[in-house]
Length: 183
Image (cartoon, rainbow, N blue to C red; front, top):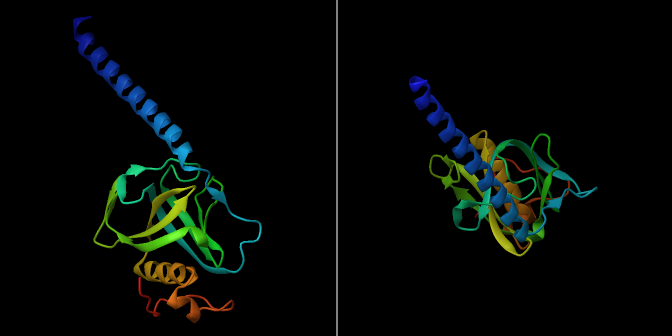
């Protein structure tokens, strides 16, 4: 029995850590309710300007890369499909309803290096700054290729109201990776 005591202590500590993690995650999800509901993809979002596979990393409070927003559809990272329409950006993770970021909610666009659980090369993630409810948030996407990164950035930049690049896109064209865009 004496040799079993250290094993029981280790098991008890592991259980306590797991309970603490579960309670912390529940609290994070409860806090995220205050930010508002995430929009769902409309029945007819318009023409699909771009579809690309990405790795969804996180959504955080704006300029607070370690404060995860755990709202529905934004809580768990994983592979995702991003679609850009004239009406906004859709982010679909397997097994979840697509999250929709209306064009009118997008307030910024750029690249980033650090967020919750992820550090990449400089400029290795796309950062979409937008308004969730009344709270500014940053959504971090990791493109699977450099060409995808350029195409996604150019296309989202083009749909933003007042964008100089929007004149280069019409209802019948798609973003190409060789077009330049000022961010």
